[in-house]
Length: 407
Image 1 (cartoon, one colour):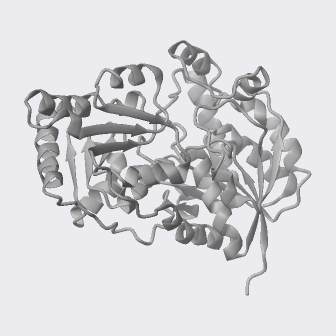
Image 2 (tube, helix red, strand yellow; image 1 turned 30 degrees about the vertical axis):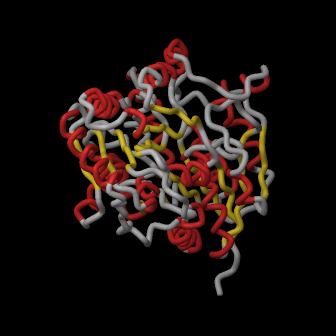
Image 3 (spheres, helix red, strand yellow; image 1 turned 120 degrees about the vertical axis):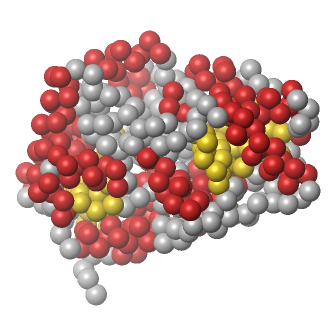
């Protein structure tokens, strides 16, 4: 039997923060002890954040957590009294101006100082924020411990806060090269990220593995279906996921009397950025639940009749919840085409019930929604079965544990 390895897990996002940034390390920490890895979490003290999940941390109450101070904007806002952060359009230029390599760089001195006081066999850093990789880099140099990098997003192609100037991009590119060369092992959540890294750093190809975001069967509990025909979107709504075409498709069906206005609902689970929330509220059949605890969100999502996925054309903009959509069994209607949804596309090719429409193909979406509505009225409930049963969080954590044991 392999001896237990002690792993320092560096993650900026951690409960009570919710969302994909916290969920991935939480699920790793939940299952790592079953595979001979004892995690110690290095994170920051509480911050102002848009999506809070007080229940997410209950799964990993056994874990040791070291929470440090930080001088990044989210921590400062918390110290000034803000608890839930609501992004505003006027803030974007400020965030862009301090994008070196992100606005969390001021956490590095504190996380490094705390990291050198801990004892561990190896270091695992999940990013974004990519400045966390800098902490891992210096800790690995200081302690001579193996460094594992986890890319939840592409760095130089990061779609949510692109590098706009040459100075910013050069700074990020230099650091990407340094941490890639220093790492003993690299993990990405998607093949597109791996291919981009290999193209820039061909010598690193043999140390890069893909471990996608999976699903946890523990999070899915059978629940009675909603009485109203319900179309549900799960995840953040922002520029890259503007739901306007899908909402207009439903609106047209109501106006044409093809669907009774009291018999349909489009609901959005998760954080909705300001202007898109205002647009959604213009439609009387649409509802915003806001951010729910992870497990509750999946219960509400699974009780619907159609899963709505909205995406754009970037290969580096991919919904992190694709495997959870598939694990729900809901038929999936995709508004928009993207190389970032290849898991969903492959599942459809393998027989999972789902359809992809161009982002502005309102008529096509109308036709499919009406067809599914008629099935609903006849009590015909569509049910899919994920072709990726091996992508449970436990199985994927076992893959990570093997990489750590082989360092």
